[in-house]
Image 1 (cartoon, rainbow, N blue to C red):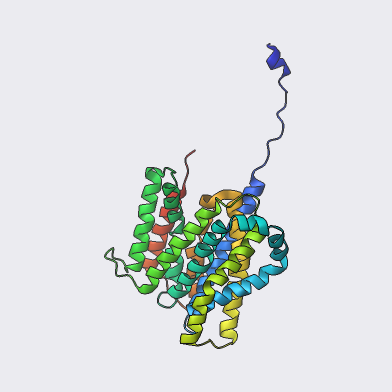
Image 2: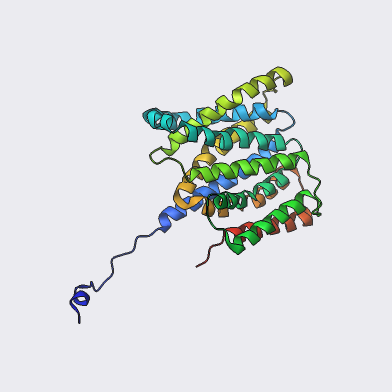
Length: 308
């Protein structure tokens, strides 16, 4: 027996359990996905009574008020660090706060909540495209998955035909999916040291500032919206739950498990949206919608699958 072998411990030390962090990350991603599914229904429900820009502006004012008691102090402590990385924070705010949500609310005017949810299901595939542009190899399996998911989306919005005649709302949702994918890809490069709540508060505040000029124009041209249960209720939902709670959960999930694994959970969104829109809005999914959903989910699952 060698001296090295003699000194080798007879029992191995317990291996660290990575599941705790991974399990929490998956649960947070699921929470964000379910809450965001409800936001598509809420957005579609108030589309006829609240102009899109006004809805998004008040969404972030409500979100700021919701996170301020928890995030104002961390933000103030880290104001110097945030100022040094202001360009990154502003770009994340543009894609994730101002642009993405405005496009979603604009889409709600001319497409169904089910279509909105299923088109957004392609955003994890767009995250893979961002990864490829960043130098990551996709491989044949991920490319095939991307093609299947895109085909499912095109069949959905083309009513069963690949000769797509896109509705305006579908085009807005494609833009929203691109914007959200860019935001999620950026989160992987969030500067180290910036607290999650401080980052959230900064992006919400910058997003509201970006939207303020457009809000003023909309108010002057379109007038305000009626303050009633049918408008205030959905705004509180998208402001507190879909913005403050869901964005914090999603950002934390990506920090724990990465954008790709969080994206796997995000694939459940069209199922949640379809069920909610059927129950609350009476929107029928139909055989074609179910087939397209299966194609989209299969494609994005294949695109994100990893080898051994």
